[in-house]
Image (cartoon, rainbow, N blue to C red; front, side, top):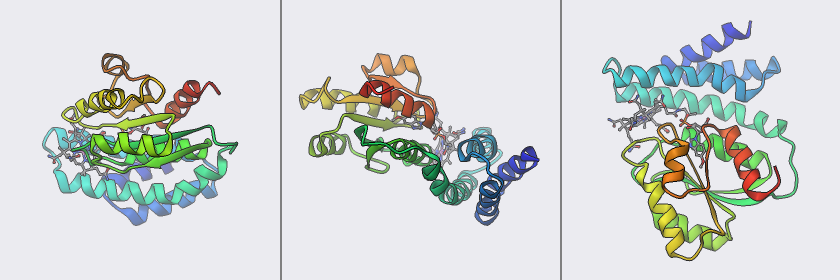
Amino acid sequence: MSQELFDAMCRSIIDGDPEAAATLATRSIDEGLDPLVVIDEGYVRGLNDVGDRFATGELFLPDMMLAARAMKSAVAVLEPEMTRRATRRAVLGRVVLGTVKGDIHEIGKNLVAMMLTASGFEVHDLGVDVPVERFVEKATEVGADIVGVSALLTTTMTGQRTVVERLAAAGLRPGVRVIVGGAPVTSSWAAEIGADGYSEDAVGAVVLAKQLMGVA
Ligand code: B1M
């Protein structure tokens, strides 16, 4: 039964159909499904399919844009349910989060922001295409415990290294921890650039942030 729903969700992303994506999201909530499972087993499969076919030249940029729009409409429906399910406690730490300069991919970063917020972190989301200086300024302004830097392109990953370097130059390291993520990012890249950790998904980002705050 769920598989049929997941397949329809995947299809709604491939078709770039925000209404269908939202309707199916509502149905999954009515059926009591976990929004994170729904995102991974349904919608992200569709995004990956579109991304793969973009890479081979079968689909084009407008197709990826439509897929992203459908994904955002599903996440908008699922977000309150994700927040409702999380057990909220006292603020666990302050996180400044953003996607690096030159990179406008926001869906994964937004999921990380949602999960961190729902788990009790105070998240300052700087958005996408964020200049390095903004990470440093905001971290200083809010007294950040953690700076999270997302990058989806191999060409923008280097911005994560620059954030680590500029935070150090501003005297904020190692007090302010840096976590990195995004599809092309790996734990060995995180180690190479001197970040404090890497996570492959939004749930892992929460686990990592808690470990760094000593509350795991
Ligand atoms: Co783009 N894009 N895109 N794209 N896009 C990719 C990333 C790509 C892999 C597609 C492909 O070729 N197969 C490819 C990158 C190749 C590379 O460099 N390795 C690519 C390209 C090439 C481009 C353009 C250059 C295309 C062009 O213009 N010719 C262009 C670049 C624009 C720019 O940023 N300057 C571009 C544009 C776009 C759209 C605007 C159309 C759209 C984004 C819309 C938006 O975000 N509002 C888009 C999309 C949708 C994708 C794909 C299809 C899906 C990305 C996504 O949202 N995934 C993507 C292909 C793919 O990934 N399969 C692709 C779902 C999301 C839940 O996963 O973002 O990985 P993800 O986030 C995960 C984890 O990575 C992790 O947790 C998240 C949740 O589980 N995570 C973190 C992410 N950040 C984290 C931070 C953390 C911890 C974990 O700590 C701080």
